[in-house]
Length: 471
Image (cartoon, rainbow, N blue to C red; front, side, top):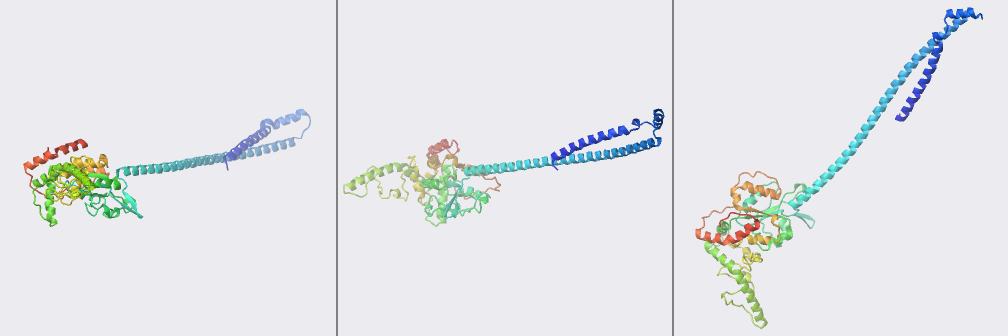
């Protein structure tokens, strides 16, 4: 029953009850003892009226009226019960109405709650979607996507690369990074892709890394080839392939790094059963310094000689030309592999004196001999300055080698923050690939300190950081 029909029924019952009560009250009034004369009154009336009414009939009439009155009272009592029933029904109906109202209200509230929940769920879903997009956006900035589709396959390449430098703790760093659960394993530490095996292609490079099994199981991919920093081809190749990859550069006191490379070279030659070194550390240092300091003058002589040769060829001549100033011959066909001081040094096209072209000079470092570049690889400013033509400084995390031995936990913690991975306990730290050697003599040490002083100062100013190396 609807609420409107129940209200109409209630109104009709009230009107009907008023009418019935009015009728009954009137009948009750006219049949009450006060409205009829007593027997004495009737007798007296009969006697005084002189009309001679039958007394028995009057008594019968009075009995009938009393019987009617009793019946009416019974009816009134029944009507009272009926009214009580009506009121009870009315209360029940009202309760039913209230219950229905409350139920409807509850349903409305529930529906509103459902709508709110739906809206909240939608909002939550939207928020989750927004948060997911923000997370993806954040990760794309901090951990760039380095997966490349190649012939229907998804090849995932490094998110970070340790680019240098040699004998500055790259083995230690790679060893402990490989223990991190959020970093994928690789087949070997030094892959040499961007400096020596670039022609092998991306698929060859990707085979060296543990690939993603799913998007939910992504790990960071990295490698550590310390010769990347000093090779002139690495920076442009890396920029072309992985321009958003994070770079890690370890720098060591250049004096100590040069000596460590020399002793490493001795061991390397023994392991590979190569002829031993015939020259001392001091001798090789002075020889390389001579190459670096004379290469620009030599390069200028080469350009002049090449120009003269072109003139001679035009006039029907040819052959090699002598530099009248120094008496040294220049191989005009292949000037980068000219013998220098009767040793197989790779000829520097440009180096320390030519800020714009130093990277071309570092072709010396690709010659393959482990002693090459003991000085040049320690000229950090010239190398880093070249890389900044391709990568911003904030994309390169620089680690001071000396901090690895004094505070390895702090070094790895800062690196974890840079890579945006969790901090873990690496356990006990042990030195890795450390070459033991005797200290250098004071004379060559003083020479090297003075030799690196200018480059170090440029580096400090560039990074706004004092590495506190020997000076």
